[in-house]
Length: 302
Image 1: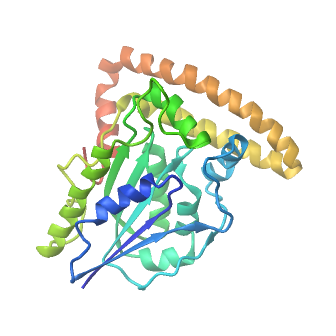
Image 2 (image 1 turned 180 degrees about the vertical axis):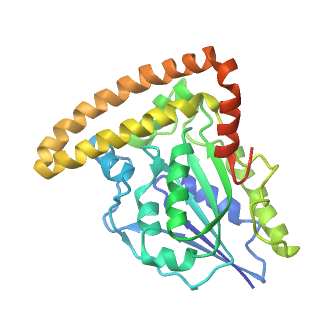
């Protein structure tokens, strides 16, 4: 019997839907055991988020210092493949997923085990996946595939609709396309579950060829520079806010408000400026951009 474990954490339910679509072709097969473990923080994150509560998770998230989770009770000690489904917080894996990957339990079950990552996010995921690779390496896991589904809105529309969804719970704003991943894209995840089923049925080795040529990820080269700038800025500000918190919670909150203003200004200026710069110098940078795209697309490829 093949044993499949899916680890996830979802606040809105969208990622759960994405993960279940991936699993659906594998269910109801007597020779495949499927387990979906949904992580639970010791202190639940509210949804919709409160404004400052959301941003107050930022320093610990980017520095991979997550709040504790309730240790999950898994039904087996070893699995043939483990799928890790996660959302992106501040260009990093969300805190519950990070907490799990840093646990001794994760190190035991992930060691030498094929892993597939499944990401549902607004648009930026490259740097979060880089951190995920580092966490998986510490667990000695074997990353064989990555699948990414992003919001259906364009970047600037989702800059409005996604925060409204997170802070109010309303996915639809009059005059705007609905926030979140399109239902057709969520259902499209089933074909990757079918591919895994084919590998099981044909006794193919689970390796980095599994999703190649299937369009598992799409790299937006316009965002690559923005992500690099953003992750450096997050690291510096996160470190500063952690130190402010040691002085006093109120001082951290005051500095956090300053950071929020800085972040909005950066999104409104740095992102479009970097996009213009990249467009102007694209002929000179194309070879480097192509190399970066191939790197970030691995192991599945575009």
